[in-house]
Length: 492
Image (cartoon, rainbow, N blue to C red; front, side, top):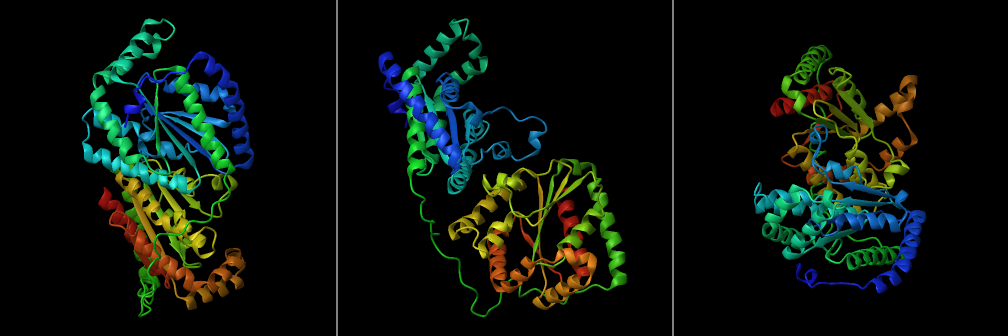
């Protein structure tokens, strides 16, 4: 894979100086066209061999283009606070919005490759990380991002020569560290590991571009031209037709039964028993959140369900057991312009809780496969791919010690109508009822089908759904508190 980057590519000074002004002008023009159109974000990943010119290339790109619209993120070891989040969180939060450029100097490839080269992990862990990277990049490109992945390469002899040259010059000596020489001793190992990683992750949507880094003029002009050509091609293309999913979801069961219709909505709890049970389970939840090991757990609770199913009331019974400094409730509405400029999961990535804290979502990332699906706010291909993307997201949360609890609250159409009428008649509840609620009621069957598909495809062994029969609010609230306590106890 690296053979063509060990041929000794060079460009003469005259050619470089002749081509550079034209390249810079065209790059700036394309950058401002991207900025004005805000059609997509540009992500540039810069990886490769130490001493191959990665830093110089990043500096030149920022010099040739307008640096005010380029955010550069250099990979560093996560701090104490950052370790409280999944490893990909450090990249999730820094994704550029549409119209802007993000350069990742070191990326989601760096740590898995380093860990394998140093023998800290095996091929299985490397392959798993690369598979995760492929799925992540597929999501980015499906969301519209232009992803350019550069690998700057040097042969072993060239790298040794480059490090020695930099070390001899007082002006560049600081750029060569003991770690660079330590990596050089493992050059053959890094070569094999990197080749394996690139082979697995060079996809049609985000291929690797390997550039020989020995000659600065060749390296710089090549990288600049590739950025320009990719930008120009993407800016000039017509809006592509919506992609079709590979296969449709299965139709409704022939006997008209489904997960939600099978729920026993007659379950109830008498008022006197409810008061005793509420005190018991709120007390247990409070004690669990004061356990010394709770400080190492982030807890994420997602509430979904039909309109008027009692999500707000259930959330108030949960928060009633908690210290106000421990939790935050996120009421999810239509995305803002800032959120629409990034992948749909971005607004949830940035709301993840630290250890010892609880994030409660009143509606959640499942809007993509519920309201956006039913209301036609995204194409079928987009909500179909979201099932896998959501499962990936939740797997990363759980693998990073998060307690993830997902509730679906279900009531009957008759009970919903009764509650709607009550909201119309009671002044302090009237704000809860909107024209949208009535529109959603007219699409009851479509929402029910979407919810059943969602539960089927995202109810996993590590992040199962808990279906709550909520015709009786007392029963529903106690079941939610009991489930939440059980899940936290299991984690502790």
